[in-house]
Length: 317
Length: 322
Image 1 (cartoon, rainbow over the protein chains, first blue to last red):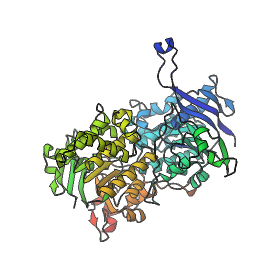
Image 2: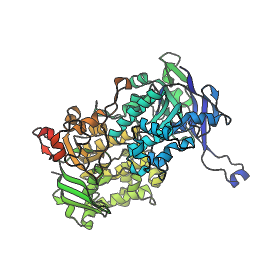
Image 3: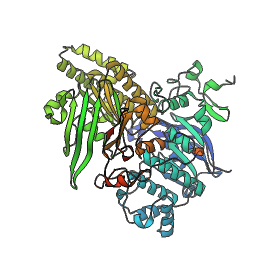
Image 4: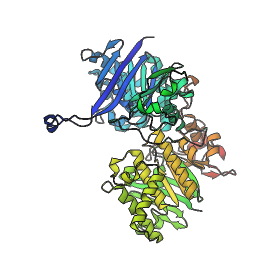
C-alpha cells in the first residue's frame, strides 16, 4: 500500500497578537502559541487515522494543515511522496477535502442544496450532484431546491459530506463530524462514513475527542497532548494496552457501562505560550520522575507503538 | 419526599400556535437520590429543568404540580421563588459563563452567595470569615491558587475552571436539590471526570439530591441511581440505572444503548435507529416513536400508550408491555 501523506518534523506557531507599529519600533518580540510541534507521521492510502486529544491540544490544527487551510511554520509536508509547496498546492487541494464539526455554520445557509453541493466543482453537473447525494442517502429530486434550514442536523451533515466528496478526493479530513449530532444519528453517520470509505477507497483523518468513536472507526490512533503526539500506533494496541500515562488517564476517564466509577486526573492542560520544561505532561503525570522535569523524552518504539515517555527508556522497561 | 412532580405539562406559545413540549411528566425523588434525565435534543429534558427552577422563557406555560418540600413551585410568585432559588434548588447550566456575572470578580460573586446563605440562615458571619470560606471552597474544588482565582474575572478562567467555580457556589449554598443541565458537554473528558466525581462527592457528603440532565447514557449510568429516558416530550422509560443498562424495556432505550460505539469496526455495522426525531408541530399519531420503532405493530399507530408502573419499580410507555 502506498503512502498518501507524510509529516516531517512539522510545527505550527501562531503569534499571540498582530505585530503593531510600536512593536516594530521597539523591536518587541511577539510571543508565539506553540500549537503543534515535532509532528512526524505517515499515513497509508485506504486507512482511517483517528486523532484524539483534549480541546486546545492541536488536533484541529493538524487537520487544517493536512487540508492546506493552514500553512506550516517549520518542517516538511509530503502528499503522495511530493513535497507540498505553493506550486502544487492546487493539486493537493483537489485531492483533499474537509468536513467540519458544526454543519450549520460551515455551509452557506442561503444557497440551495444543488448549488451548495456543486460549488466545489465550479460548474453545475447534475449527474455528479445526483450521484453524490444518492451516495450519502439523500434523494436528489426531493432535496435539490431546498435550503439547509429545511433539513435536520444529521441531514445537513450528510450534505456537507456530499459537498466534500463531489471532487472525488483521495483524502478526507473529518473534524469532529459527529459531535454535534444526537446519539441515534451518530451511529447512522459512522456507518455511512465507513461504507463510503470502503466504496470509494478513501483515506480518512478523523479528528474526535470521543475515544469510543475513535476505537470503532479507526485503524490507527494518534494521541495528542499540548501540541505534541504522545502516542501513535495501531488502534487495537493503543486501546487495549495504552502505554503513555496520558493515554491511560484519557481512557480511564471515559464513562462506560462496565464500571460506575471514572478516574479523574488532576490539573489542566498547560499553556502553550510557555509550555513546561521537559515532558509537557509531567505536572499531571502520576508516574513523574526527576528526568521528566528537565529533559524532553524521545519517541520510543514499544511493541510497534511510538510512545513519547521516559518510562520506556533504554532499560527496556 | 423531596420532590414530587405530578402531571406536569409545559407548552410554548409560538407564532405557529401552542407547541406542547412536555406532557404528562411524573417524578418522585427522595432526599439524597441522583436521577438522570436522558434524551436527544428536543426531547424536553432542558425544559423540565427550567420548569423546576421556574426559569422558563416568557412564552412558556407550566401546568400541573411541582412539589418541592411540599411547596408547589408552579403556583409561586416570582419574589417567593427567589427565596427558593439558591438554598432550596440550584441550577448548573451547560455554559457556565452564563451563570456568572461577567463584570464582577469571581471572589465577590462567591462572597455574595455566602452572604445570601448568611442572611437566610441568620449565621452572622463576618466579612473575613466569608472570604476564608470562599477560598476554602475553591480549595475543595482543587482549583490552583485560590487566592489568585478570587481576584480574576470569569472570562480569565478556562471552561473547566468556571464550571468548578459554579459548583463551588453550590457547595456554599448547599441546596437540597441540584439541577445540572448538561454541565459537562462543553468540557473535555478528563475535566468531565473531575466534575462527575465532584457531584458524587456533593451527594455523598451533603446528602444533596441531583437531577442530572444529559444526552449521554454512559454518563448517566456512572452517576445516577435512576435513569429516566425521554423521547419527543414524554417519559418513555424510568428504571433503576443498573437494570436500564442490562435489560432495557422500551425499544427506544434499547436502540440508544446499541448505537453507542463500544467495539472495533471489524465487529460489524453499528446498530442505528432509522429516521430522526419528530418535530413538535408534526407529531405522529399514536406512539411518538412508531415511525422509527423496529417492533411497531397496528396498535402503536392508532393510540398512544400510557406510562405504566411495573412491579419492579420501573415504568415504561409501550404497548409491548400492556
